[in-house]
Image 1 (tube, rainbow, N blue to C red):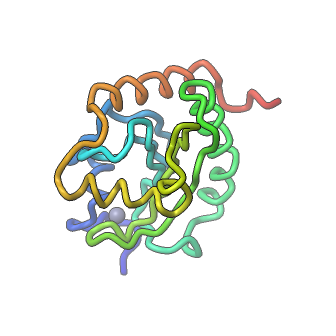
Image 2: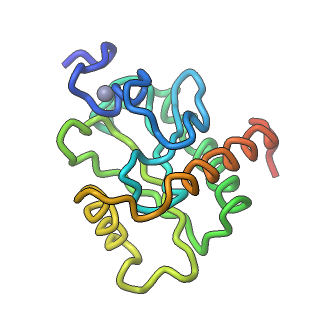
Length: 163
Ligand SMILES: [Zn+2]
């Protein structure tokens, strides 16, 4: 496998090339990582996806730079999600099992206080399955609004502003 050239059939590489547009556009991007809202059909407004720009199919294959950037970036993003959405928790999940989505990608899911118990934990992915059956489960405009708000928050909290 060539892990430097994007795979033509890879959905994540296609999204990274701008061929699949997420609601609200790119929320954050640096030389290694990109953050976007999950693609429509939308399982939940504010459900974000963080992925390496490089085509990588295993966590073990992340470069040293990608691995070193990951922790601080996740903290920064989840702080922005907390500020914008006030979730009870933010879930972080990585499976990459869907067809054409073997390229690793981390789901950052804002679990709200009013989420029914049967949709908490791994069961939250039932929402993704339900959305992929063909329907947005939240308005696209709300996804776009939250994507924009997280982007603004990240811009107002520059990298290196640690506390
Ligand atoms: Zn890829």
